[in-house]
Length: 65
Image (cartoon, rainbow, N blue to C red; front, side):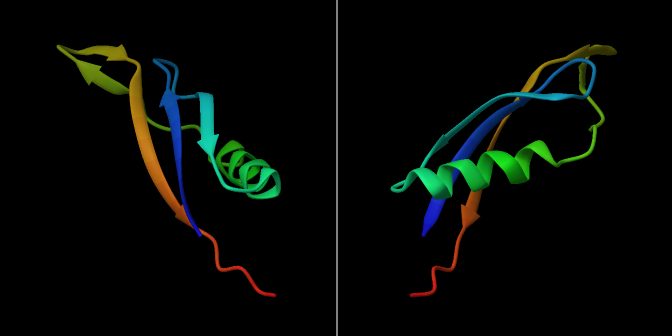
């Protein structure tokens, strides 16, 4: 199952505004959990000023029956 997660890295490097669309609520919950475990990132800069950067990350889950 391939799902896409959208999130923002703020000017302080923290991840916020996590949005996930998945065919099953458990997959959505797991994707949010994994993204929440990411370490603090280096913020993007525009003209030397830290800015918010939006990311889209594809996540592939291998489902076992």
